[in-house]
Length: 223
Image (spheres, rainbow, N blue to C red):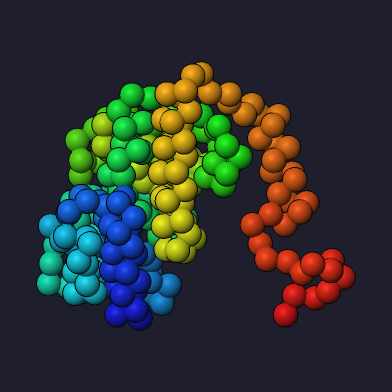
């Protein structure tokens, strides 16, 4: 399975770079291999827009290299800590411009639009710590509690997902929410959805099956 997870990680890195969330060598992607419980993670110094399966290294849960000729990203401890704490299957770390801008000035990203509830609600900004350090990993894990995303002060963003596709979608959604916040703030003081409004959104989404394909006829079985 290692070749398959390497391919998935490389494809995700190229997509995120094409979307403008990964620039040059800045950022990293990881995915748990369900067959081995090893983690495929982008290697250090790789230009992510050109990432290929050979640019992805396999490590164990302690960060030891199991397979691959390149050293893993310097943020491997962040990935390992986030995977362990959240039980996620994949992690995306970006230096996306709008997310990073918000992380340079805010302590939280409030909920302006109900789509952000898919990330868990208000997004916390982890206090600044030097990249690649255990301190940074611990700060991000704390910020991720009960969330699928966290911002990193003066650094960037982290998202998690049960699958790599979900982690990538969460990274794209977080960047959209951060851009929305910046544009709304430029117009005036944004209206923030309060806890009651957020709960109503969750209840409505569950009741209506929001975000999932469903038949036009409620009695019709989905094939």
